[in-house]
Length: 477
Ligand code: GLN
Image (cartoon, rainbow, N blue to C red; front, side, top):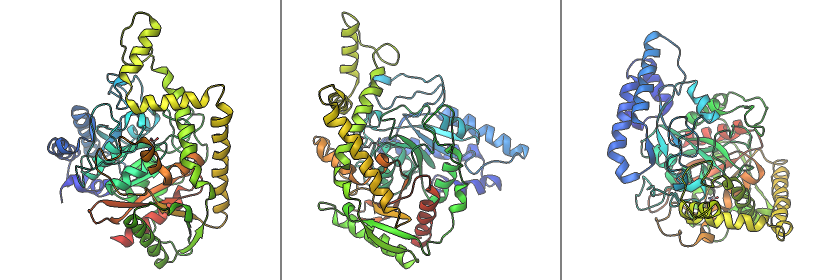
């Protein structure tokens, strides 16, 4: 097996037993990127020199006999909306094409404490708006299982990098499914933590009340290790939780005996792909065989989750994206006066989807429509949260498909935004409720494309969904 195909915890063993060096490992992954990238295009920026330098310092640490963490020296990819000091952070937008942040996101500072080897900044839908990575301002990323298909999105570059062995693990962000859905399309693990579990400081904001950073990995063990490093309160993010962070590797125990799993009937909807439904129901049966109990539950407001999300997210996005005015950040296109300059900059440098959302958001927030749309959406958001609170009185976790289909062909949906939005039906409710979810691979369809299911947990109970996912993974091997 090539080094670049292994998990972080396997490579860690090899590093501490001096079977490989960190430079050898980084070189192996970078060479593999050189060969593979022309087909996959997972990255916007490849940080070869920085990666080799970081790997060299890891080798020096090991030579000195210093203790290293499981992720020390392990090559990783960072979604390009997470600020990296001195390294371009574009959000896949022409408006930030040359933006080099003067500071690190908190997750990067946290990662730096364990000496990571960052090999590049991963492609994404512009400002994380989309579910296919086709909305990138630079290029489309291809699904490693079939390069004619999308990798999902918006963290499509991160998921494709992990699935194509161009990174051992990656960080993504999830506002309405952008970690879980690409993980499911690419056949890897993706976890959206509870809102507030991980600091958003330095994550370029899309919709601030929904955004969360999380891990995309090859297996559940690596996922627990990454979450251990990035989780925790941050005084730079007032919405980050002060709750104690457990050691998530303690959840790597294969045991679901007595676990009560809810299957929400509204998630197995008409129009859902039959192969996806069969694979997800099979996964549920596997849990039953392993000693869990299944119960059909109802989350009655699921049918309005997409419309609620597509009012709240664009409203917050319109507000957050006001800052790109040709003055404070990024690109400027000149005009005859300042207003003309702003208009030219935003018209030319934002892509179609971003402009569409700014229009929807500003419309929903405008004086005449605020009560009818935005305020109404906030009320429905509470109803969706209440649905989960009710459901969790009876069950410990909820099992559902991650997406209604497997990866589709590039170009298949891009001209129909509404169809694309409806694809988010299974993922957006968690963001609206702030709950954690993990997407786990559970087989392939007849076109050999991966299928994933998600486990949804109570707020701040990532531990239980990690344990259940780990149990499934052990059984599945
Ligand atoms: N597909 C959803 C959207 O377009 C989710 C994106 C995300 O989670 N960043 O908004």
